[in-house]
Image (cartoon, rainbow, N blue to C red; front, side):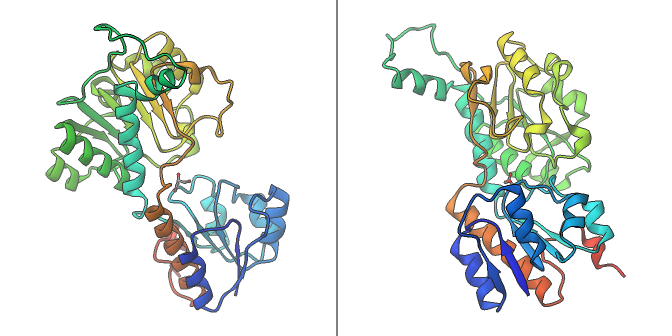
Length: 324
Ligand code: DGY
């Protein structure tokens, strides 16, 4: 079976695919254009895919030979699942292995914003250390405050647990389903979205993104948040309206924001949000640890190998394709 791997990935993934006797193609060019990528996909049975190129109707029509896709990501918002289902194409993803790393970044952003760490680091780099000033560069402490989690799945749980253990924060959450484990272990309290927005001192987004949620965090939502609130997004940039977020930050409707995902992504260097002292922006590095990326390579390869043996992918986002 032919497998197209569109970017270099950690060696463990390639080793597993090779040991399984699969015919692997990895292009010399690590940054294919969309057209080049599509051409490779036209000539393969399975794709192990890194990145956000869309697996939409057009893709599936153009690449009728593709019978399986293993994403090198937990998110699958770039895949039209309905189109994949119609063609019986299983779509694999990489949950769990990146939950710690991604929640670490959410936690890091929360602290960075609360203490204005990246802004102060920038000042040091500019030679602007400044005198000790009792009224300057003041952050806020997180002890005993309320962390609100939108999307209490694996990553959200890890973030809530860190907040609870490190700062004794009260956990509230809004989710599609109640999370009984989190309620037992973290005393998490399920609230409506409106209450989540109103009560959170830190609001951290960890939900799966769907097109209906585009711009969910907009002006009217930011206006309802506490003035000391910190907005954290490590899920998908589409969740927030970045202009509205900028306005909320400039007008001090909220305290600050930590973003590992932006809207658009990548964002422009000219984006005025980058000039604000109450913001920390990272370039989508949630899963960028050696451990998580090795895990993602292993899980993505295992998904492909299972498919090649006629077995169910161990991590499949559309298991309906396996039903008769
Ligand atoms: C994921 O795994 O979904 C990360 O955001 C990388 O895309």
